[in-house]
Length: 149
Figure 1: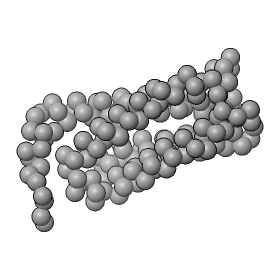
Figure 2: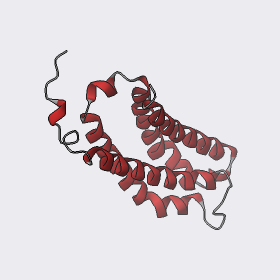
Figure 3: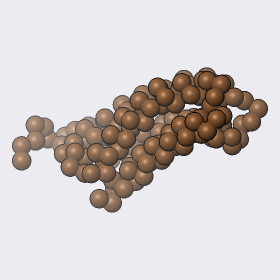
Figure 4: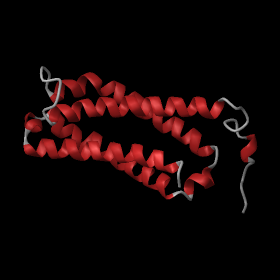
């Protein structure tokens, strides 16, 4: 199989601390992003932070979510580039990327619109929040399963 570059000489593979450090940043920023999104979702479900509306929480955490997602995608690309063929042929990784794209699209369209509306506490708002949580949790599990498949 032809590999256009030598994986062993890729910077993330040539230093014993590079990959774990990048992975720590990737996981930390993903936790921050999911955490800020989950705060909005849990409020839409009527759980916790009852003194704020989902719209207020979304506005307060929006920049942290965006910064976290930008760092997650960037660090994820760096990690992927360390062995792209291994990642490409893994079904769990493929699911993770598809679910991540859908979750980001969902978060910045439907989820955002409902969270900013007055109907965020309705049944529809609860369904939107539940779907959001399920999408993000499935991405976490896909990342965990990657190591076992």
